[in-house]
Length: 331
Image (cartoon, rainbow, N blue to C red; front, top):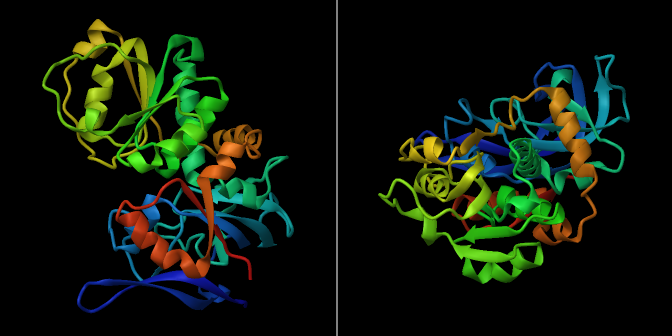
């Protein structure tokens, strides 16, 4: 048994939720195959939802949050891993209903774990976290549908958030002309510094436009917003263009007609980073390893300690966070 610190979310008798850094013990963790000493994690909006009691994310409380974790294997009952291995865990049930990576230890099934690929240590992997994994999955899908840099401008919505900012940086590094949509005009310089050629006010897309199609504008898009934003982006795609949809910051529903699909042949691509096969995750982490030292990735990340997580989650939940946040959990 080992004592450790973790973000612990508890529900009071009045139904409210409290978030604190609490001392726990590894004997409290679920009886899974691999015990990991978490060195780094990162913050995601799903973490903020869980920390505020969203039952669609976490059903039972108290709960140790955090959907991202990277660190060192301490104990393993699986032949696939041994003590000392550097590993990454994202997705599946981590930080939802299984004790998560905003704690210094987790115990998870071996089937959830990928090894840190060459060129990517635990800290570097959490410069990306689930946000970077999702951004790269979106780009991969766009590329498989023929959205290459020569086809024209690619839009990223929610560009100052975790997924959006990393998508901007990765797309720019791959040679794309990136337009970044954001509701934070004060962050325009940051978006341009990490690779955006154009910064667009999110208000251009945020309200429903009743026209069934709009002017052809974008060869592709990465959308984290959903809602009317996604509907308007679909209407603004060039013939044969595609949008990779991975979020619902604005809304899980949107209004559209079939006209852009049957007159322009556009594509709506769903992206899931939670339940994808482990082999696909491993392949994407190898892709991200080649980008770990990009100045843009370093620039859009800020680092905090576990002690600072409760306050940071409040900021994130209120929409006040920019870029991506790395969490150091070192003892």
